[in-house]
Length: 214
Ligand code: AMP
Image (cartoon, rainbow, N blue to C red; front, side):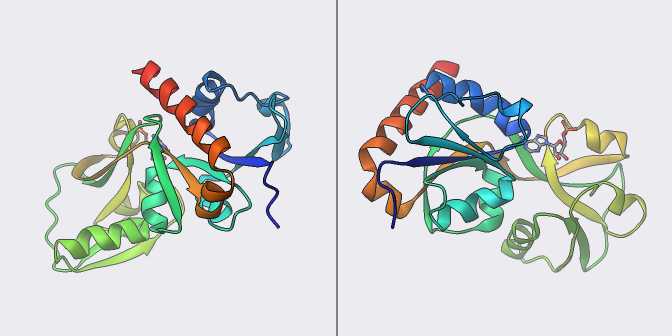
């Protein structure tokens, strides 16, 4: 049975957390202790009945979908990869912006009929190339994607690009733009009904903080 008073917010650890905490603070929610100095995974906050979970971005949609968290904050890349419509996505926080792109070795023309694409975003890669009617073999990797084209495991990669420095350092260049990525708020569908006022007022405060950020 859902506790109607409690509101659990699932945050993505790492880069997104650094940018989201100041925004949450502007919206009036502050963790009761320093998240960075603790190995805890769930924190109380300055507001009674509001708790903050800090987890991997790829787990945020799962927690929200299953109702273990009412609200989740994670990257659009992760939401695109999961591709679920079992939660609402009411707000773009416009933080941790980056792009999903294909990348390949500098100046190398990609010729094979059937492209080998390495990515951790296998669904995004699959959808992107199939929408274009291009035949590809997707190779799932969990990190250090830039290595794959260098050692000939793949012809190109699908990855997140911010400054492009990581690609450049590995002799790769961005090629095709797949999507713009930023940090989004997702909400469990049942929570949106059962805890509507609480969630709506938090969303409004967050939206105001986003507007203030410009
Ligand atoms: P850059 O060298 O600035 O292009 O950054 C590229 C790497 O940083 C990528 O391979 C990602 O792993 C990571 N990265 C950059 N921006 C983000 C972001 N907004 N969210 C998650 N990872 C990111």
